[in-house]
Amino acid sequence: MKTIINTTNAPSPVGPYNQATAHNGTLYVSGQIAIEPASGELLTRTIEEETHQVMKNLQAILKEAGLTFEDVLKCSVFVGDMNNYSRINAVYATYFNEDTAPARELVEVTNLPKFVNIEISLLAAMK
Image (cartoon, rainbow, N blue to C red):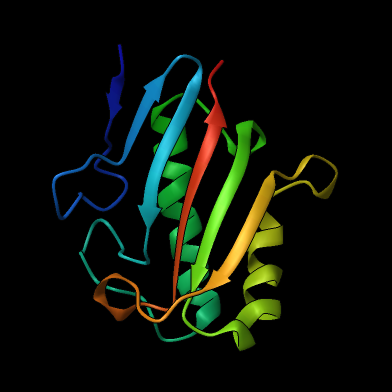
């Protein structure tokens, strides 16, 4: 049986999905974009600001599930421009301990929801 995880501290889903589902010891977190949950504002002035907001949204969902970034097993990062790789990595690295960082792929795509520059989803181990 799966458990649905949603929090008001991350953007509400805009379609037929939930922020996360938990099943059999794994948390599956839907892709997050840089929507500031309190205002609904899309934060895309810089790739750094955008990446930070995505990570804050993921962190809020993890917290709702009783987890932290230390519990993350894998991240899937989708970007609109691979030229932002090092700038995204600089922000991303501040959320993980390099020695225990999760597996990850980062791929460039043609478009993302609301035409943002980055979207990240993740899998985490439940406690």
